[in-house]
Image 1 (spheres, one colour):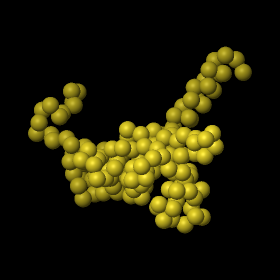
Image 2 (cartoon, helix red, strand yellow; image 1 turned 45 degrees about the vertical axis):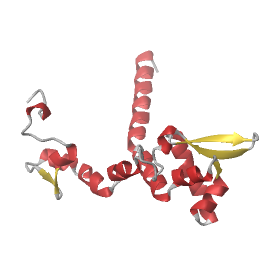
Image 3 (cartoon, rainbow, N blue to C red; image 1 turned 120 degrees about the vertical axis):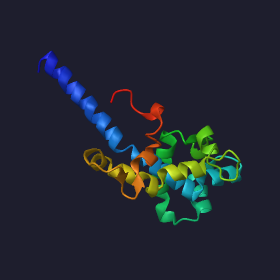
Image 4 (cartoon, one colour; image 1 turned 90 degrees about the vertical axis):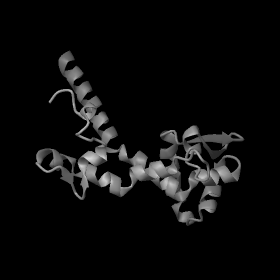
Amino acid sequence: MDANQDQGAKELFQGRAQLYKLMFSHLSSTSLKCAIELGIADIIHSHGRAITLSELVSALDIQPTKTTSLFRLMRLLVHSGCFNKTKVNGQEEVYGLTAASTLLIKDKPYSMSPTVSAFVDPLFVAPFQSLSSWFKGTEHVVGNCSWNQVLGIYESKPWNKPAVQ
């Protein structure tokens, strides 16, 4: 393989990695939705300190057989920066709040849980599933809602129109 082919293979590999990242990016938002619905930030906050996985399983009152799945969820949420994970006494791992997860505590006046929940709600996400059909069609409505409303575009305002027409 010459240098040009090697460079091309490297670029294709990077392109593939980028596509996988885009394909799986929805996992971050769906995991965030799950964390809000389970009240994980609230549980850690009310616990008063970082919490072990077994304490979290107990507080969530879920079946112990789902501990591994909860571990995977928390690993993804830690990776996305929503929670942090540290070791206590060099052995036991505990999960704590970050600035992002602090904003998910539901009883705080600055809570963003309602906003995040709205943005990951199926009613908000559904129009995006038919975006390509909307672009190819002549209608101004996707499903039961105006695509312009979803995007927040109001055509009557000139500052919302694209520069090139």
